[in-house]
Length: 227
View 1 (cartoon, helix red, strand yellow):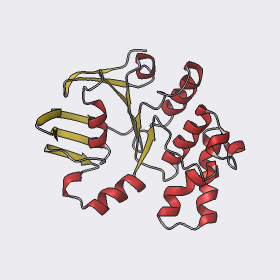
View 2: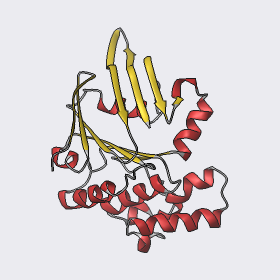
View 3: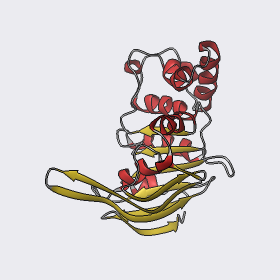
């Protein structure tokens, strides 16, 4: 489904060259919940950005459902991210002037869907994350856990083939983190959807089906999670 083939990513910072990812080969299949762990600066977020078409490799290839991401135009990559990949971030990234339902519907509205249809689909996703009762509330009227549920619903609204999560529980307490992780663990579907999550938390990583550890831009280990 998503593949990195000898992928590398190099950044130039002033006079310094940073090799964030160095020749990584990795495949994620539908139905998997892959967690990526590593110390700060190990390259784990860069790895996720390459897999989610948020960035392109300096060397090697990144492939989504057989399509080479580097060969796409900027617009094609933008549409790929909007229509086929859902994202959940640590900071929620909700628009403060929109209600929960409007935040969830936003990717569909940007795609030209009629407002009524988009809001109806948003409500279905909010029901899926048990937050339909907060649909008309604004982000500043919600708890951290509620905002992250809205973010998960938004990630699902276009029925994506992959959901990518970057430290999705980093701003949440332990109890709320467990609730969000339990929700994420139900999203992978064989033949339909994969979930990839970057985390520094071993407890969060235990919710996945497979654990990839990265250090210094290289894959250190790749093993099934033993529950």
